[in-house]
Length: 481
Image 1 (spheres, rainbow, N blue to C red):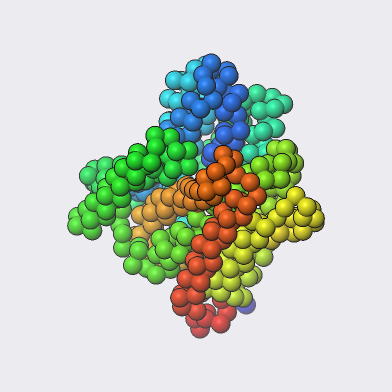
Image 2: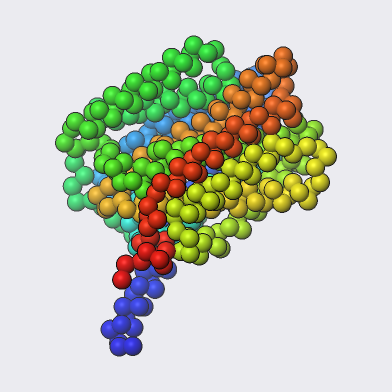
């Protein structure tokens, strides 16, 4: 090997290490953000007592966070291009961390809601801008590992959050559910300053204000409608009205983006089959099914099995272990089988494991429950990593910012859609029986319906070309010579 070749290999190795370090830095911040969203719900009754209000009033803290986040997500890509992704990402962590401090120090519901709204604004910028940073620092051959690193927070935090939140609320105080973000945020900002390089677009153009208003209000109404459909606050007509408004505004935003010269969001990414399939069509359906599972499982174990929150949490930790264990083999599996086979076959395994959860009973041997949950966790991790990686496999540099923003918007929709569909099936099944609380039979229907959505989406992935994303996965059979 010549000196030049050795130097080139050393540079590539150094670049690969840099990409992994950047992805890890981004993952730390993502974990803080997602953990916060799942940990808060466990302490709402204690917070209500502290503020002197009814527990039902505390739901506004979750709602205002979600709505503020929805309003600012469409702006994230343009801000990253205009002011630099590193600077905006650092600012988003700072805003989120500072707001977390004041949430933990709040002495009234009004104070809490105010700081919670600010926290949502910081959260809105963190995910899409963080993903842009990773995409800009990783070559295509490094993309699978980089995306896998920033995907694990979304897999682990929803499972760990409720368990950790319950423990903190029981043995410490609800304040620490927010104050725990302070050291994580400080470490995250330090890591960004140390390891993340600054990269800016030469000319991002002027802000498309009409596009921002239409897309922000459309997404806000859509997510609010899905949130209300779970709690049924305000009644059926309010849900339908907000859903209709969200659809109309989103359609107007789409028409606007296609008509103007410098749109806030470049929709040309949807012309890329791999992006469209993994985010908009089959990807949304697949995420809807998988995102419903962490919502249904705790309810199944507590309401259906009659277990305590601690015992239910022990089962969820097995589910988390499955998520975590798949990381080591994700890259080799994608290299050997390719995206189409992995998304189709693994998606089918994930969907069938969801259906199988509906047939668990208190008499099912614990070993079988553990094995099923571990399998569900494995397949969930594989599917999410493959989806998130394939989405950007064929996206060009000019499309990265808009593609990352669009992906974040659709992931928020699928997250709430999964919970909404699962809750709707539980409510309908319970109502048909004339009962108030769901029982095992109701959970069976919910898991079957959700699993059916997953089965259909997994079959849809088989329409991808065999060579889809081969340059990223390293699928040997279709590597270019």
